[in-house]
Length: 130
Ligand code: AMP
Ligand code: ZN
Image (cartoon, rainbow, N blue to C red; front, top):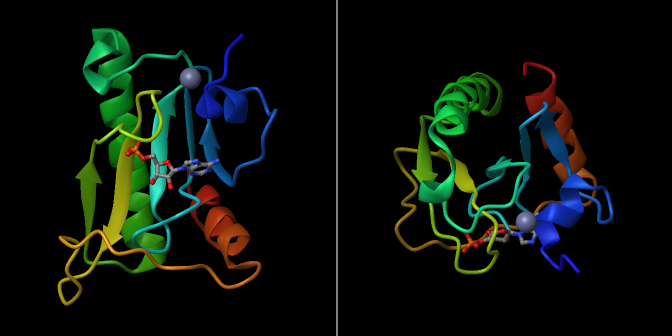
């Protein structure tokens, strides 16, 4: 039985604030963001690590990542995007795309909380340009 929570998001067994979906990829808002608009981008097939993703999908992912980054910059009004790969909590390859600001350090990996209903607004804002 597949117990991977990200596979369950893909199969809609558990909910998520999805901002983009196509045949091979899904992007959704991180439930415990380090900045508002913090996105996770993952392939729909389960791979343990980002470097396990086949080359053709990696190329596709890089282009999609760029598209999402441009959307975040335009719609969240951040200064730049931090790209991070960790994968210690969830064993389904994914990349963190984190709206970032020149005057707020990311280094501490502090967390912020959405106000009620705010996560859905972020999702629809980002989704609208993808
Ligand atoms: P890591 O595996 O260390 O890259 O971290 C996994 C990330 O997934 C963390 O930032 C979590 O907040 C996030 N996360 C875990 N479960 C969910 C979920 N159900 N929906 C959205 N984000 C999640
Ligand atoms: Zn999985």
